[in-house]
Picture 1 (cartoon, rainbow, N blue to C red):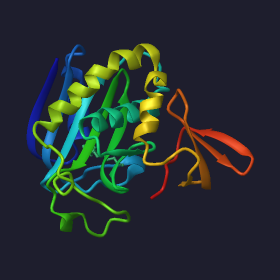
Picture 2: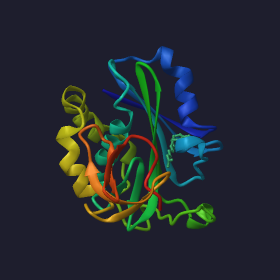
Picture 3: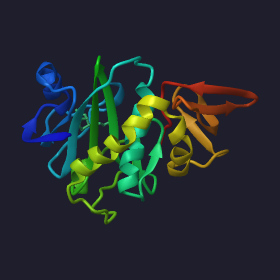
Length: 226
Ligand code: BTN
């Protein structure tokens, strides 16, 4: 079962959800959305600009077991969203792109056994409110994507994938992820902390496989740069 509460203005939906964890029903996916955030966060402590017009949502998932699947869960959420909006391409580990422009991102935080899945998507956000970011950006309305009940549809899409993910891990989704990747196998990418690398794929754990010269590495932190 999915329960969504819609709020107007919050600091960060992640923080609102953290305060509520002790009262949540572990059998449900509970989510909070906000029309606007004053302190929206992205990965690695970055700010996530959250003016009116975006989808800002945190869903709490109750997952028992090891926490190593952190990155893989981020990829799974991206895949769940790309199933709804086929134009979306995925930039490891958490960016949602359309035509190489950022349309949204995913932030996973843990308060075991709760996993907080934060999703931010530019829907009808006026582009001038997103000016000055260090990356190209776009919005769903600009790309003519269907916005109707997107919050609930995303959670339904994720809910449909979760049982297989929890029992078999990321491996069953590897191939689909590669099909939705913003980068083709063998292409040059820039990875923070590693420089220019060749994209060799995604492992069954959701790590980024790269080759630098003769050396092959599977990375479980960092990110592909714009
Ligand atoms: C990123 O691009 O680095 C991730 C962005 C995640 C933003 C979402 S918006 C809803 C939730 N609340 C936050 O403060 N962050 C996430």
